[in-house]
Image 1 (cartoon, protein in one colour):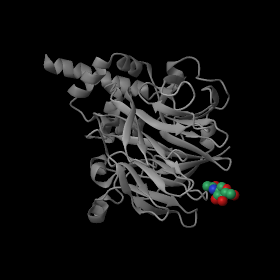
Image 2 (cartoon, protein in one colour):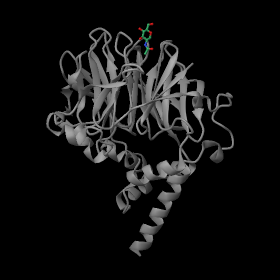
Image 3 (spheres, helix red, strand yellow):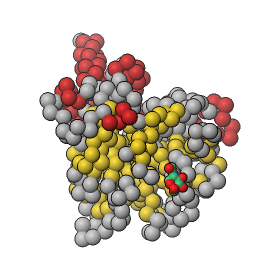
Image 4 (cartoon, protein in one colour):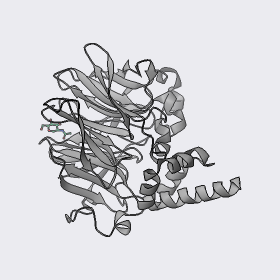
Length: 378
Ligand SMILES: *[C@@H]1O[C@H](CO)[C@@H](O)[C@H](O)[C@H]1NC(C)=O
């Protein structure tokens, strides 16, 4: 009897993950937005990251140098142009001093808690200090010449962060806003966080002045990317599992309140403000109907995660290598309207876009999975 239940459970998961990865149009008859912009992303140039994979977030220093990016082996690399390539800039884990041989070049999620896994990156425009959200080591900072990053915060009210993901810095008030995606799962269990419908993520604030951490929002469904608006009056937060962007007001009469800013056709990862004040949202993948159903009944997803005799994360990575995935990013206005859609259906050139940053009329495109950074001229 128990075997039968397991078999059915495994079958459901196989089917749902398979369907979740199918091109969006085959599941829904109308495309998300008929812009004629489909597959524009295929015009991207790829810049290989040698040695490691997964350049998740991209940041430029106050002089426009970079990008800087955190990769799978725990290092933060800086791009010095085609002639020189990528050079190590910083590390987040204190173990790098003694475990460099094990860490350098690692793609193994099982080593992330030792080597570190830097995700969101942001420079302080005035000082040139780089702020880092590391999935395992919390909130860190490193000076303009790099090296070993200093940990700023790793706990709130005595409880450790579990899956620090992204951050933004308010240079005027000295506040660092950041997300902790789950109080239950770590980054290497990313897919379990989604399938179980986990709602233990938090939005927090670290004060550079008082060094105190405060929880601003809790009960979020995998809060991921975060960005301040141009005037600093609100924050946008990607709520990955809910496939939406939330707006958290910091100023105006609405201060302290939250509203849904935009509902999306897939799972949003990082979100970055463009020079004009719009927002680029990277979608990790689109969502399929069966996965939607699993997510709507959280007990089912939670049971799947508890019962499955397979490693979901590993299974998923095999499936993706075989099946491919659509790449997608959206540009949203300050009111949450979709202004532009960039896609690569079937992931011929780009896949698993984790961040899109606009600088000097071009987009730089990160991916938490792939071994390259994309470059796209607007
Ligand atoms: C952007 O433009 C500025 C000014 O021309 C230049 O200094 C900087 O290197 C450029 N950065 C990138 C990443 O293109």
